[in-house]
Image (cartoon, helix red, strand yellow):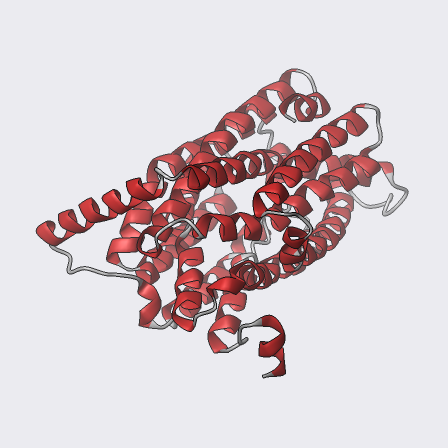
Length: 402
């Protein structure tokens, strides 16, 4: 109870489930190596940009409809469907070798992301609402998100070991199926109260609910503060999402410049260094998420915190590009780490700011709308990054985009 008095909320069984969800969700062993996997198979930067853009465009098409389905048909079923789609995606990545197969895999990936985006955040916020803990949403969400980053840290270390021992990238996709299945079972155990308002699945009731949801959604977005919050968070998140995987070839350049494991093949040398760097990186982003509320308190308003971190993140990306261009990949990686940390510090602050002005009943829909704007930025920036990296260099692409 002392812990509750200090933090204002109780770390009960459902809190532990929220943390476990994030931890298992981020046991994506492939994530730290996906771009390197494509480059290893001869996929160009431009093709990689096209693949990622396809994913983002499909996300853009399906996110708001998925948010409607979540708010009207039940969040648990929506989330479970998402993880089934992820499992199909992992299977395709593990067996694919051609550009066409990867397009199909990314279609499943995008559908999975569309069903998941905004939905779990809305479940957390609903739980805080029922408990009367809304005032602590930044800290609560930051704490649960920190477990996602811890999961990513462990995942990258395990993935590095898998590739080092097997000598093959595809095993990281195969082994990612198990934690996805465990997360599916965990979601099935969530209380029914977190499902949101559900309706009987018939045409009349469904149509009426969609009309009501859209009306509430439109009313929420007429408020300037909501628009400002969503645009601010989506710009940086889209930029971050576009550039984050391009850290992998930067680490590879760093790994090959270091005098370690020189007798091992290039893939194994890279796997060890990538695993270690991402492990440290995600421990730092976990710390960043946990301390998001402390960061927000340093500013007179959450809007000020969002603006400061937006500019800082863009400067970090620009610095990484400059350093890579002049042949300092080790220092470039450090600037890239800042880019990651800023995103994970911003997310809880942005969520707390936005949810103050969005009606609870349409929260999943509104958060999906924020993600839709993010995917527009991401789709455009990923394609441009791939194009510039293919024609000139990755360093110039980072500089231009930032």
